[in-house]
Image 1: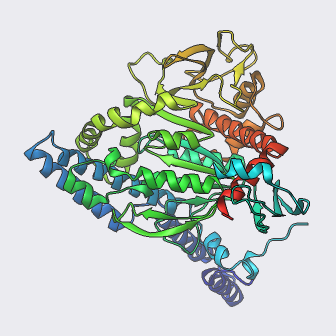
Image 2: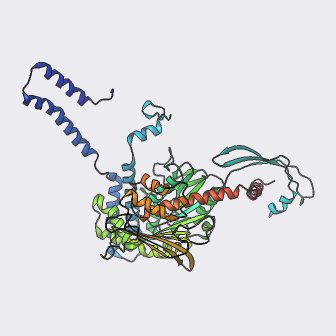
Length: 129
Length: 410
């Protein structure tokens, strides 16, 4: 496949070259495998880190924290006032917006996003026979 | 008034022609001549207008954080297609546009933005913060097939953004805090749903939503709910008496611990006598049934599933109530339950199960919330088809003709 990642191809080349050099004992066969395996493990570890649970975009997250502080200050003065209710309503609104933003990030797929704008490209063509 | 006096004098000089047929709608080009009796002279005027099928309007009322978005996604999926924000427009648009549906968030009709509400000390739940006149005008325009420039409320900045164009769809959903508040808007709705979440469940859901991510404290969530409660009880809760279908979500009764919210008891209250809406029933319509499907034929894990069905009164109106307590664990439980429910308005056996599986990752897919939301979606589809079928008769054509006359004054 043309789109094989670079890491795989270089390790494969490495494997081929070392095989050609000498008839290595069992240990080196294990060692031969290890760099590719460890790279794979490393990359999969990297992938695991990247594919963690979606976090709120920082601007919304900051706004929520700020609004909670403001609400607590406003309500410290007068807990029954309209201003206190409005402040906590703002917290609720921003929390809802944060939750929707998280859902959007979770649901978005980079390929789908790209294909929405460029449906005629090779990667995005669909064939229905 | 002018319409009534003109109509009898109307002479159709060219026959109706159906130029295009698309998704059941028929665009008709009509040319006719009108003679004005009142002016005592013959004025021959040609007026052309095109008539499309009308928009069916559905209202969904619920508090913030009660699953309106999930409900909307399920509904638009049942009705066909995926509803997405309109492309190329405001990135913070709250509108969703699908193949046959458009979902409008009523927060866009806030009269006061966040700063304005803070100054006046009102919450978004307060009717003073919403522009009901504009809401009514635009919903009425969309219902009669006229596109509108709807304002956009940006939930992140809290400001009102420039308006976006909304074209009249086949089915228009208006979801938000106040779809049933104003009587004029209520009169425009073909069907309305209210999501009634009990306080314990609401609290549990908000904890799940807000604490998991950044550890918002329990006290702040409690304070937020408490502060909004009085406005909610005064303005939002009373809307449920006007809804045609109410979905109540309560803690389960199957687990002895007081108010356990991990498992939900969901009640679907269906008003009797709603046009084009036939309530779902279990075994025998009008009887009171208590059904535990788990037993010899079906084995379920703890705490199992229990169904109740029976007639009831809701705000002194007759209603039927279908209740599910418990959770589905396996596919065969779902299909077993579906095979015993009647009047589901499905087009083929297993449609409810298929829809539930299609969205197995949505919250509520394994309990009554997902089940009843899917059923309501199928009911809305049936309602839409019946309305459109009913209106494609001669009576509708006459009504469109009258409307056409009113729109193009001669």
